[in-house]
Image (tube, rainbow, N blue to C red):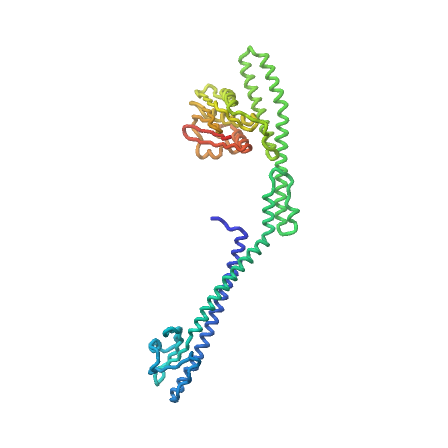
Length: 414
């Protein structure tokens, strides 16, 4: 259930409380006035009934009607309406007599039953119109109350709205943005100061992370360059020694992967400030065979085939080092989780799919594979797929995993 906003709750609270109070007060006022009028009318009729009874006892003529509203009858009166003659002793309200409404007071005397009637038709009509006018007044008043409540809520919540708008305008790529100076003159100053404290700590954290990543990546370049240069020299000197060539090939590949990793760290460290370099274009179809061949050594004699069908061209706007990390990590995980069968790679339009024939990923872990430090392999660190997901998010690529007992399909849509 959607929760109402603070402004809506404020408006509805005022509207309900004031509106309910107004309605109850108006209804009580009308009801009280009617009770008072009814009581006064009954007292007047009782007084005239006593006068009429006295004239009957004294055998005097009855008093004349007053404006045609108050009339007197005896049980034997020829003009007594049948609706009235059937009434029992007591006070009867709103008795319909033809097209009129009568209030009737009936009393038994020793000389017979007498009736006093008062025409309340006009009074009832005025009362009905009074209720209608009251309804209109209440409706208009409620509309005015609602408009006033909305205006008051906007005035009261204007600082909160301004603070929310200022928060939405904060650019995450910019540092040292503060809210306190704009909200120091009203009650939201403590909230703005707290947010500023959080932004200050966040700026420090981002700055330290970016500084460490950039520094570490930069410092790793020199030893990696030395390792790659020494590997090339040793390769030329040991061409006739296959065992040494195999070891040097592994060193060269590890140095290349480490170089790609440092390049990824540098790119991700600049994520908040820079956009993708439009001059770097990479063809996934060209690097896939090389990645598949490099990962073949991880099989360690297992009966697993590698089928790479990447004839179609798939050009992406990204550094080749980052594409290599994404594809290499997916390929490496497919090989690591396949004991027999095949690992297949296929390009379909803008989507790269890597399929293995391993045991699959359990449903309990499928939503955690991209979390940092999550791994299902003994000795694993849970960094590869986390880094892959970050690179995909950085460049707007869509990565997904579909797993069954017959294997897992990793797809990246560039």
